[in-house]
Image (cartoon, rainbow, N blue to C red; front, side, top):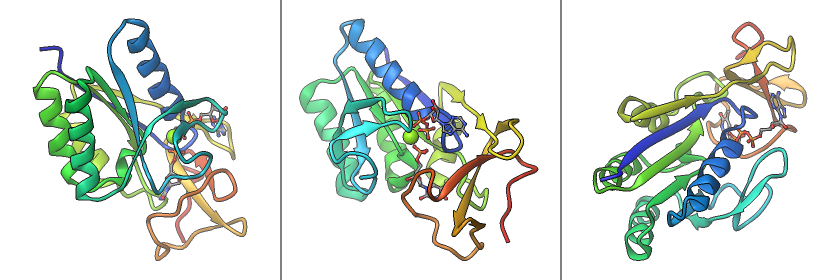
Length: 190
Ligand code: ADP
Ligand code: TMP
Ligand code: MG
């Protein structure tokens, strides 16, 4: 009955993970049974916690980014009777997660999915895009452009301080050593 699909999106450093943890924590204060999930490929700061760029952290189930992983999220949610689930870095999961999360919401779960809007080329992440058009609510966050200080909607990948070329791989786990938040004007793809 209380099912709801909420999507938190924006570029890197926009505060998506911070907002996800905050929303999960609020639900726990409201005595709802809640849990966080994160993909296993994101081991930047911790193996078993969701960690934001500002150090905020929260315990999470670590899930492989394949079809079995998607099944695992559904299985754990149902087995433990979670009323609220948060998924961080949702863009790294296969497309099957879209239907899986929508079904959970249909069945009464409050689903909060957090993920990148665009990759370093400013191409949409397909999973995020598909979740956004199905969402009951969208939280669109911006970061601060590291060049001009205006709101940033994009993520610049830097390799040895230079903009990464279009043919570099889409997935490259990293933080401020490889990425900067940028506005449209200061985002470059050679
Ligand atoms: P996301 O998950 O969207 O990458 P986080 O919640 O992990 O974001 O981190 C947000 C934090 O990143 C901010 O609170 C701030 O401390 C830090 N930060 C670093 N660089 C920037 C930037 N360019 N714009 C905004 N916040 C930044
Ligand atoms: P964040 O949104 O919490 O900052 O984390 C985004 C993660 O996604 C980070 O590990 C870097 C990675 N990433 C890619 O793999 N490809 C990309 O094109 C971009 C922009 C980020
Ligand atoms: Mg994050």
